[in-house]
Length: 309
Ligand code: CA
Ligand code: CA
Image (cartoon, rainbow, N blue to C red; front, side):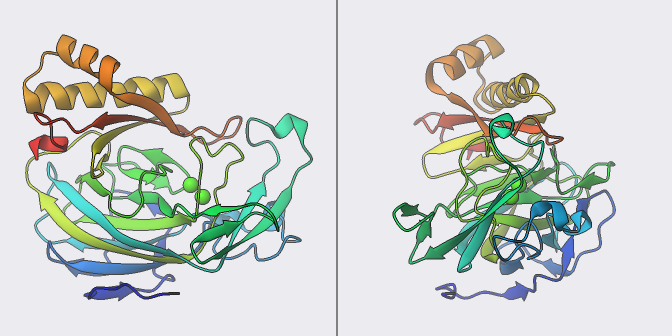
C-alpha cells in the first residue's frame, strides 16, 4: 500500500476499535484542531472473510463493523461541529462482497449466501477477468459520541455511524454534531467501491488506511452529519423506511438554507425542489438495516457551503 504523501501526526492501529457509538466513550488519542491522523481500518467483517468459501453465515457477528478510534479533539463541546476532512483513503489489495440470506432487493431471485473476492490493483476493482472499473474509495462508518443512546455500528443515526454515503471519499469534509466533549470520532467500514443503495448489503468491503485532518466549527451544528465536497454540500437523514429518511434530509437542508442564508422555509422548499438532488445513500431492503437519504445542494455563489462558510 502506498503511503500518504504528506506528513501525519499520529497513526492509530486497527485493533483500537469500537463496535458502538454511545454517550461515554474513552478516547485512544486526544488531538488539537488541525491535527492529521491516519486510521488503519479493518474491513467490516474484521477480516473474517478471506476466500470465496468463507460465508457470511459462518462469521462472528459481534466482530462486524469495527470503527477505529475514538479520537477526542480538544475544544470540541456540545453545540459545535467536529470537522473531519478526508485527505486520503488507501484500500488494501483485496476486498469482498457478499449476498446475505434475507437481505436486499433481489434476494428472492438468487441463491444465498455467496461470497465474491474482488482484487483491487492499480486503482481498479477487478470484478472478473473481463469486468473492471475504477475504485471509488469511501468510508461507510463515520461517527461521533451520541447524545445518550448506545448505537451499534451496524446502524446510522444523528451521530453518523453506518452512513454508507459514497460521497464520503477523498476531499470531502464531514461536519459532525458534537454531543459530548471531545466529539469522539471513529471511522471504519471502508469500501473500494459502493453504489447508491448498496442493494445487496455490501460494497467492496476492504481493509485499508484513512488519513484525516480534524478541525472545529464553534456553536453551529446540524441534526445529522452534514458534508461538503468541492462543489456541493450534503445533508443526511436516517430512518427505518426511506420516505422518512428522505423527509429528514430535506428538512435539514431547508433549515440550513433558512437559518444560514435567511431564506423563508417556503423559499428553501422551492429552491431545493428546483436545484438540489435528493437521493439514497443506503437502502438495502429487506433487512434490519436503516435507510439513509441525502440531499445534494450544489454550491451557489450566494450559498457557498454548509454553515455559511
Ligand atoms: Ca456499511
Ligand atoms: Ca460495508
